[in-house]
Length: 165
Image (cartoon, rainbow, N blue to C red; front, side, top):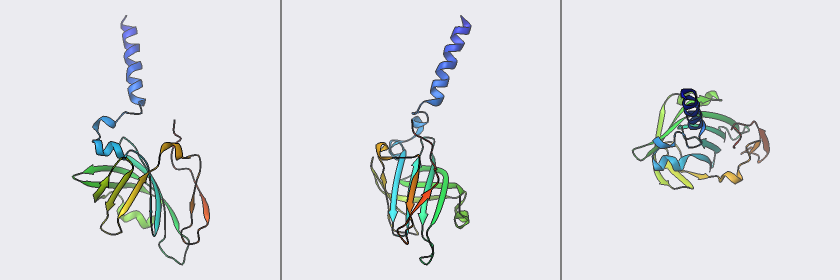
């Protein structure tokens, strides 16, 4: 009998560990709205960010540092949170050394608007950022391509995100 109880307990715990809602219980309602894949486009950069319920994120960014040269691709990952009306991110990994000074630091920006489809915040060092949530049905994660912002040419980008189930 105890073997049956232990088997059921292990089965239930395993189900909790892989549940898609795992980790959502400790997120605020505002943070729950930010889970998913978002896209932003400002004059000198475009990016796609996937935020997970465990408050981690992966970001793929195409950015211009010098208008005489092709844009660069950057892959970033880290931790995110909403704190006191601000959207905060900490970069734990960056693929380009130009971003190294941001590693390990929390960067918090005041939230201007937060809804199920829009996140808008105002960084100290750039124009207002408006991120738009991408509906799951529009996401193709097997491959992605980004446009060279300077010349408008498409370049193939490596797959960054896991496949959705």
